[in-house]
Image (cartoon, rainbow, N blue to C red):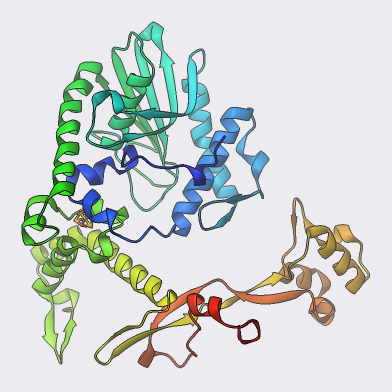
Length: 418
Ligand code: SF4
């Protein structure tokens, strides 16, 4: 079983359907964008999917994996209680919905038989086949708490459903798509579904194919991403959230600035937002309607600028200069195996090796110090070190902290200078 972190995505992946459909130029712009940096939230979701899959395949409950560490593209994620609860809610639903039916876990599908203009497909979290009822159900786990996902009219789920129909030929009449999103409250509950007739999905497929061809036209557009490209193919909106092109996208930046500048007064060369009490209700609602989009764009620009700084480039224009500072350090045990550490702690303190565990995990330095008491905490001081977990991008004239050496430069420094 390939880990969730190692899976490749199709050019038109079901999970990106909403964005690629709403903004036909997004695929073309993303092709030249730098690769995604996996966020911690995305890594958490990947780990949660992995735990869920292990449960369904092994018959175990999620708590069996508590404390395990799961490697994702850019992080090690610890399986905590919240992840276990999230995974378990999905696992319980899938187990009960698939009782007496056929369950396919993480089924990969391709839409190649529809002759799309590029490779298109995805992987359904769970597909449940019930030929006696003519019912095929697709269940999708959403681990996030920030974006509440609707089941109704959901293009990602419909693409999964289409793929599942093509991969599992049968007497299907009804398609059911279900979202399990335990961490985000929704008026229809944490588990919500939509059902439709197979013929509705086949009608919808024609629209999907037209959306793909429009994306292909954008890729083939000869004049490049100029004004005409923006007008014909780019459409900014909430779907911009996970777009790789977001930091440099002209449509998203102009839409964000358009909303922001409608109410921002230039003052001393800087745009200053007006006090909320000076806005009327129409203005307030307009800003609220676009708040997520603007925030996502700001986040994308910040992440892009930080990435540039970490690669050793200057982030500077005129008087404004940004630099990297190290994030506050976190105490961790020095690099050694768990057994070596337990032995070293036992030797340093005279306590038994089992005293340093919060089963099934090793205690942290702070937990061991607490257990020993304030007077004895010096006994373990040689065994831990402080490690920064990364960098912040800070405006140079707004901090007294020292600039950090960008990772790209550290890499090329002689050993003693690091
Ligand atoms: S950021 Fe938004 S508007 Fe720009 S390409 Fe991506 S989806 Fe389209």
